[in-house]
Image 1 (cartoon, rainbow over the protein chains, first blue to last red):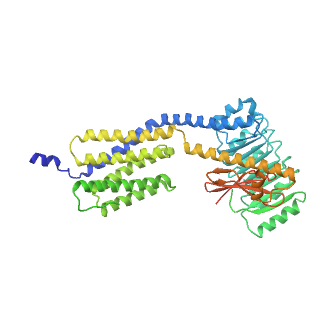
Image 2: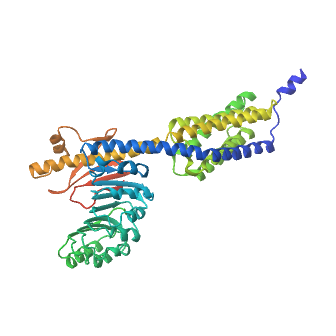
Image 3: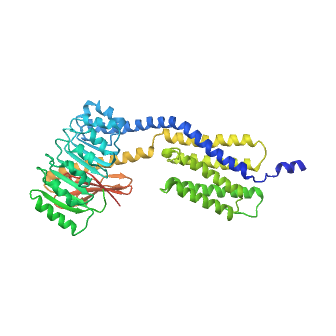
Amino acid sequence: MSSDNQVDRPRPFNAVPTIGLVLMFAIAGTAVVRATRPGLESLASQENTRLARMRLAEQLALIRESQRDFLIYPEPCSVEGLLIDEDCRGRIREIYLAENLSDARLGGLRELPNLRTIVFLFANNADAFLANLRRKESVEWLSFDHSPVSRRGVESLATLPKLKTLCISASAADLVPLHNHPTLESFFVFARTEPDRLIPILKTMPRLRSVTVQTLEEWPMIGRLADRLKSELPNCESKVEEAEHAW
Amino acid sequence: MFSSRTGNRITQWLLAAANVLVAGALAWLIAAYTKYGLSTFWLFTAAIAWVLFRFSGANKIATVLWLSAAVLLSAAFSIPDRFIIARSVPGLVGYFLAWAAMIAFLVAILRGRGRTTANLCACTAIVFSFILIAGALHTTSGDPKRHAELQKEIRIVSLFHDLRSEIEAFRSRSGRLPKDEAELVSLRGKPMPVYDGNLRIMYFSEDAQHYRLECCVYDWILRFPAPSSPQRFHAEPF
């Protein structure tokens, strides 16, 4: 009887082994997870590639049937498959790009012979993509939305020989490479800083016909800027808008 | 929280475990589904531990168990990309089971009926099997949430394009734009396209020459201006 009581009695709480257990769980967990991570990531990468190709295939089917001429979110792993599809590659005129554009495989998109419009939506590292696009002849229209571009990126896009329309968010200092751009006709800019410093750059563009400036400035700054644009770019349809948010 | 200061020892243990489970589930959900991340998780963990110890009838062991669970989960949080943290419902359930199993086994071990080492090994194996299986199932199934989001965005852009083609066709036929969404619906002979449940694309006529299409997704308003605008697409926060 007394031995039964001894067996049933709970052990007193002991902090040292408990802390030991805690540490053991933490260390063992970290070690096991780190050891198995590469294998799991490889499997995940394969699966994500499969999903990306599935998304691309759905769009290519519609392009092949001439139901559309645009491609949305081509991913680096699916570019190679796109380029070998002779039926589709010549029909694509517009692409939408998002997320991280630093992967060099996306540079393969310059092989699309009739690509005219590129829309960047929440894209990162647009500069890297634009560097691969230098001197691409077919591109006429670039539109950036919530996709930062630095001066390096502007230098790249300034080399596009047929660029006619540009929608971008940048400071005047970053737009300097667009000086004397020979083909730009329509320019939509969210001027991050000092919007009036844009005017000297715009004045050097011989074919510019339309300018829209969005700015976070308020009246009367907006009115003054609109007046300056009208007086200094008389052959150009100009507009200044107050932006609610930076983009 | 459950509380008892008068029941027998087993009841008190069960209640303490229930306290820990409920508090753990709450902390876990907060950490997994809010933007506040690890620091908030630790603050919440410490607060619950104190509440357990001070007010809820839990003893020191339950409090330490709670903290041990927090250490384990924080180790998982520290992994880059948080791939082990379940982002899908099945993964979340699996992770929760792993955590509950850990508590249960630790309780059994600390009640002390011998064979502690064996129990400890079994506990470790079971817990990390659960965690790794949940993580592996989640990870190797790709990222279903991202896939669904991308498909939704692709669908929205496609719908914008299709609708714009219809509007431009009407403009070329009649020489004007639909004056409002009601007219556009009557011209189409069907409602505006929906992209997510009952959410529909909206049409706004700005003036005789300009219009825009809009929809709301996540915390953003997506705008698709008329083809004459240099801006092809624009997103603004709500």
